[in-house]
Image (cartoon, rainbow, N blue to C red; front, side, top):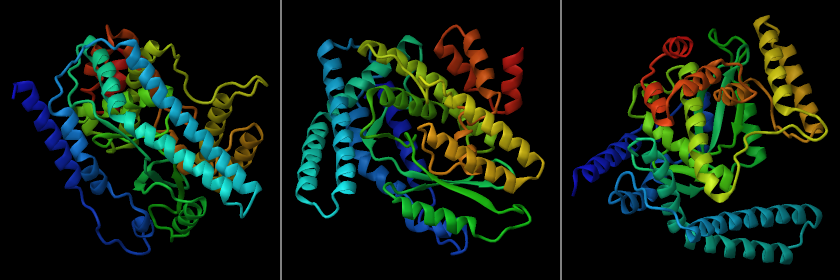
Length: 404
């Protein structure tokens, strides 16, 4: 085995061990956040073991920096795979609509469900080749940038877990994010949120907590977990985004992930910027232009602007100690967004704590996105940008680097 392959194997083994040796199955007090959420915990070690064989089979022998040209039949093959995913989403929408308007009817629903399974089977048949093509496409971009793809690009299409987000009510701060198994019903999510918010207050959190069970658009496990019915313009930047987290894991910036809200925000925003740029370059081969987030509607309603104004007003109210007023205002705004066609199940402190971790979203008021984009504009290449920011180990370092 050649030295690059040995190094790739060592990286894979270390990553797997770091995941599987994480504490799991511990007993928590019944009246704690963990105790209430424990019945719904995502089985992380189990998921890793289930994906271990595919990981080793497809990546240990993969040569670094594969720059093999992607042929048009490959592009068509990937497009067809994601078209099938769109067909599944359409069928699932028809099932929900039919169930709501025809309660008790099973024959038509059964036929639609059988169609879903048929398409899923076809996607599964194509999946291995699709992943290989995408790995080569992203690897080609990284090679062009002088970035060695370590750890190897690795991802799996599956249903992502959900995430339980906690924030103090009196301020917006991300606390205790916990992975929950996928598929929780709205009733289960609402009940868990209510139970957590009913926990006794403490000297640290005088007003108690705000909770939110939210969907994930991807997860940087190893292999990373990408939603199985993603659209192509979401999947490719997401694969790249999650790989950037893998890359940062072996550098000071990634090792600071989760040590503070600021360091989490920096990590996520770097992954957003680099992941989007990589994804955009791959999507160009498909004739697809990358667009992110809710757009301005033809009616003139600007979700990004309205959400940013909402966040600023909430922060102002919380800074004055007007917690209940802030929560009433967020509920009013949630209803306002719904009337404009943007349904948010809950809009609370936990929502802003989670979505505010991504500094280039309207839910954030952090200057991090601007600083990082300044650094990117000064960088000679994407590879130069990644190598520069990967060495950052504090919020102050980032600010200094951006303004100098």
